[in-house]
Each structure stands twice: as C-alpha cells, then as structure tokens.
Image (cartoon, rainbow, N blue to C red; front, side):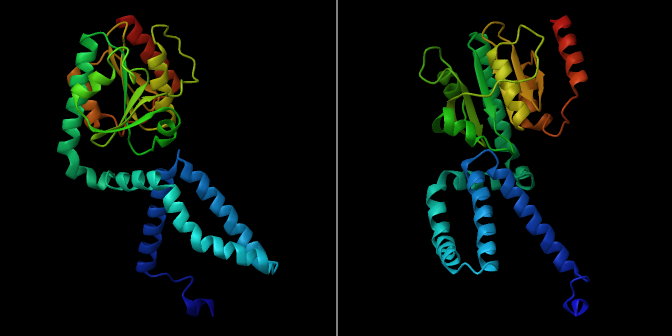
Length: 273
C-alpha cells in the first residue's frame, strides 16, 4: 500500500518542491534571527505542540480555544510585527540572486560611504558605520537606536557624526541604499584584544562582526585611521579606494580567520604601524 502511495518513489517535482520549501524556510529563519518575531515563532511552535497534544488527549475546550486563536492570531501578528515583516520583504529584494541587478546602486552607496569616511578622517571625527548584510540587525536598532529613513550620502553621514550632535554617539546602520538608524549601541567583543590602541569603537565593531555578517567601518578619532571589521577580522589603516572596493563586495565571501591568524595579523599591523 505504501508503494502505491509513492512514498518511497518521489518524482523530480517532489524533489524540487522539497528544495524550494527548505530554501524558503531557511530564508525566513535568517530574516527573523535577532528580531522579536523569532520569539513569536518559537511560541507558535509551542502552541502547535499543545494543540496536537490536546487532540490526542481529546481536550475539546483547549482544542477549540487554540483553533480560534490560530484563526485570528495571524491577523494580530501582521499588525504587531509590521516593522519586522517590512524589513523581511526588503531583504528579499536584496538576496544574492538579485544583487547583480543592483550592482550599480551598491557601488554608489560604497562611494558615498568612502567619501564620508575620508572627510571624517580628515577632520579627526570618530565614527562607526554599519552596512547590514544577510543577518538582520533589528534587535540592536530597536533597543538602542533612533530610526531614520534617508538615502545614503556623504553629507548626511558626516553631519550625523558631527561632535555634540544628538546622534553622533553610536553607530549608523545602513540597509541597502538607506540609512535606517543612528545612535545604535553595538556589543563589545568578548575576545581578548592585546592591541591597546584599539578603542571602544573598534571593540564594538569587532563585537558586532562576531555576531553578524555586517560590514562595520570605523574612523578613529585619535589616529584618523579608517578600519573595517568583518567576520571577526579587523582591517586597519585602509585608504578610500580599498575601503570602497571591500564594501562593494570584496570580502563578503572570505572565511573567518582563525584565532592564531588573527594574532599574527594584529602583531604584523602593530609592527608596521
């Protein structure tokens, strides 16, 4: 009977369907990671488990209550988690399959960030600029940041980090071609840092790069050096051309370096500097 159903003889359409469902499910989990919605998803899984347990035990009242909740809970979830859903839809338009169509736009954004970093470095103004990638940063934006909605431009970035301005203390978060938040507090790295020339901004950049795949640009107020953190690695003393090249996609697929390699690179940078 099982063989008649075809359970052990899936066709090519079944394989394609399984792969598509798996890809969608994985993508949704990546988009929800670090947001309030992931907590809701876990709670929903728990309620579904309780519902099936109620059916097995024939708890009619509990079963009826959960059925009503599932019926109207979807609408409530859409209203409550509207910001996360909007962010997720924006991310769907930024996946790697579609990035080839947005390459020109990305290069323009990278150039604006490079110009801003150059101006801030020349003025010895400290700054930290986060370019969001696949992993969402809503958790940090929601808890500590001030939401903005402006196209990325060098004048806006330099204005935000002007000393004593309301939002200069903290990080700017860029998503796509938009500045979405400023004044964001980032987690400091928990790894030991032997280089004492690295200040709070560098430690915060490393901390976020260890928890996400974001690109984090740091301008040092003391040395005017431009650095970039990515996947636990800090590249220091970059020029504008190299910074722009990296932001445009030069390091997105590089593997994270080992701890031994990090120590060697840091020692070499300290010796050369």
